[in-house]
Amino acid sequence: MTAMRLASSIGRRSVDLVGLAGRSVIFLAESLSCGWLPPLRLKRIGDQIAFIGAKSVPIILLTGLFTGMVLGLQVYHNLGKFGSSGLLGSVVALSIIRELGPVLSALMVAGRAGSSITAEIGIMRITEQMSALEMMAVNPVKYVITPKLYASLVAMPILTVFFNLAGILGGYVVGVWWLGVDGHAFFSETARSVALSDIMGGLLKSVVFGLAVSWACCLIGYTAVPTTEGVTRATTRAVVVSSVAVLVLDYLLTSLLL
Amino acid sequence: MIRVENLTKSFNGLAATDGLTCCFERNRISVILGGSGSGKSTLLKLLSGLEKPDSGKVFFDDQELTAMSRKELYAARKKMGMLFQGSALFNYLNVFENIAFPLREHTRLAEPVVKTVVKMKLELVGLRGIEGLMPSQLSGGMAKRIGLARAIAMDPKVVFYDEPTSGLDPISAGVISKLILDFNRALGVTSIVVSHDIHSSLKIADRVFILFHGKLVAEGTPQEIMQSGDPRVVQFISGEPEGPIPFSRTDKDYFEDIMIP
Image 1 (cartoon, rainbow over the protein chains, first blue to last red):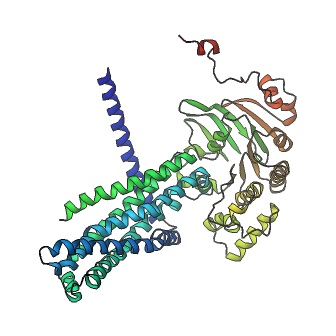
Image 2: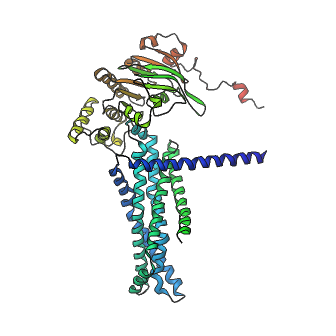
Image 3: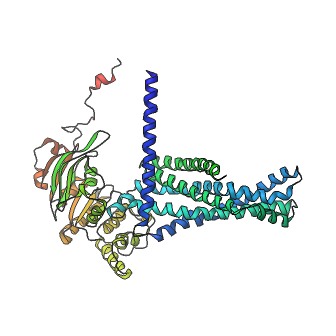
């Protein structure tokens, strides 16, 4: 009897999961495709780039700087054991450009912009603003969701570049100014070891993460239970789901890119 | 103007509308009355196409709303306006931009013309001069009036009102009732009002529909409704807690229910 119940609950869960996956993909496909029909709503996309992108720049620079600084310290103390602290620049730059830049930028955006995307969409549903758009013959998905998705596709790689620059600067500050690594060696080592494919791979990751974060946050906000409690839960869930998605996708993409 | 045939819609097995058939006439104020949970808000969503029925049909201007593509539905929506219960103003836009929103979306009017039209709509609701305020700075009654100005911005043929007077003080409620009446009499707007506020709505109604558990229990002019002998109507109008519409939501015997087996 318990076995039967277990089997049926596993079955129901699986069917639910497949249904959810299907609905999520349809949601993404619909929201992305309707962006290509007029009106293009470039102003809405611009506003969202400003919100998701430009307003995240300070926090991205700050986290980038400290990540680079801590990497500089760790690498110096560990490479120093092998007497090869000259490699500091290239190790810091490579770890940031390949991994930490895209991943940490995406996590920061998930926390800062993602949560507010979910909350905004959820509140628009509670207060019937979504229905109001619908009643005014404006497609709410196209007006609210689509610009956020495209904006994050644009904003995330740019933010990642900012993170990378701040990170390398942080490594430079710690390594060269405080720990006495040769400044010329820092940059020549970095330039020698970082290939274009590293940069492109990192940017590709950031585009994928940008889409994943905004997709998850928009979908969770759009399907939130339209109550105060529902939106609160959805906001928490959006940050958790999008952060986990970023880390899982990072593993998958790294194993493909290497 | 709007006709529904055998309309059924249920949520989680509970019928919100149950085989409803009725007709809302052109240029009239039709008031749909019913208690909470009687299915009247759902009916409004079905009439405007915000929800799709499980079965049955809705006709808007003799076109079947329930069979329309998204494009056709949006074309029909340009002839509709809706005043939402919570006003549903866009909270990131100020009063002016809220009312200008449908104009900017659907017309190519020059900015000075948009400005004039917005001022005219604000004058209609008696709130000219607050264009720059944000929705969060408005009182409930003012927000309703701005919502109303936005609903009629495109000069719709039909306006749906979802609980227009609920949660308002008597004077604000009176203002909204007067505006509904004005728009109907002066602009010929077909009005469909969902409400549980009997006194406000009987004053403005041309025709009253009383809903109970998703079914139409009475229909007529306000006089006919007031003089109705139907015990369900009498109970609703006098607000008796007990009657044919039971106080308790369950049919199960109380004694049996609390007995320890």
